[in-house]
Length: 409
Ligand code: NAD
Image (tube, rainbow, N blue to C red):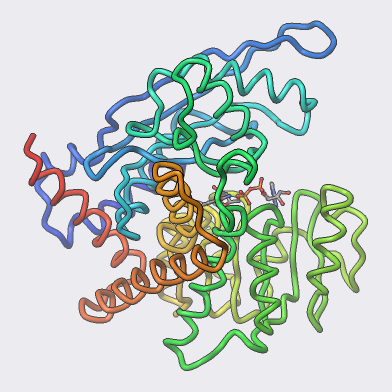
């Protein structure tokens, strides 16, 4: 099942409960604009390389569209559109005044030099600068992109439109970025793990956790949970997984990745595969790398009690059903990883006011926003006897639908 099929299956489940008319469903699912561009650049050796870039703008009923920019070889139009749709529900679930979009270039960033990555990024901005902007569509980092890429975007955007740092978020602090943005998604995953466990009268202190992916999201999640006393027994990245029954020394793993780029060469008592990590007997499993990693083939073998979807779309719908029948609780991506877009919103607010918050304020506002959204979702799920995912979709779709109707067609 591809990403778009998964996204529409989850949408359908909620739409059925809401009794949405076929016309309303079509309106809410149809993207406002799909853009596909050629991104050509000169390689360091003089060769010409050509890539394909996308910006999918799904919905702007609640405000300017917002969504990350992904550099990954598997980026394609369908996946980017599915992720754009997810952004529409996500910004609505946490009730920030945005719609949803997503972009990407089908490229392996590991094969590019810094200079090549900069030329590629600037060329991509040349192609899409007229459809992005602080009041229309605001990109941000995602897989394979980071604050440096956002710095190139803001610099190139300024060449066309003049100074306007709110045109992109996730920027470096020195270029109007917000303190706390880099850690925000992982910190949010950690905060929401605490919220979920508190509903079961537990704290994260002493629980066992396995995390797939040790990039931006996975590493900050691991750092937060470790600092709160959780035992992170397994971590992984493209180089494979590491397992330590007594708990991995996360600060040492972070230092290793800072020095070497990946976990390759980081020693623990046992090496495991990424597939084995997913099936470990732990309290909390956190997929924080790719989509579609839990399918109907391995859902029966998952032994975690709770799954927090830090990545976008890590569980396929058939697997979701199997997990629900087995009593495994899933905190859905549209809330679980919304910390990043929430602090992106704070960055945009600060840019527009030419005013800077300190880290403490950002963390407090993040915690308040996520906790409030979690409590609303939990209440709805309990009242209606539905899964947390369906409750989150009901909240998101409901808000977008009401905004659409109020504004008029
Ligand atoms: P990243 O590029 O910083 O890190 C990705 C990590 O996954 C790396 O450790 C990489 O080695 C690992 N990885 C890649 N392929 C893998 C594979 N086949 N098996 C196991 N590990 C693999 O990306 P990120 O920003 O941490 O994003 C991770 C996920 O979280 C994505 O699904 C992304 O859409 C989602 N997300 C990110 C943010 C954000 O703010 N960065 C916000 C919301 C959602």
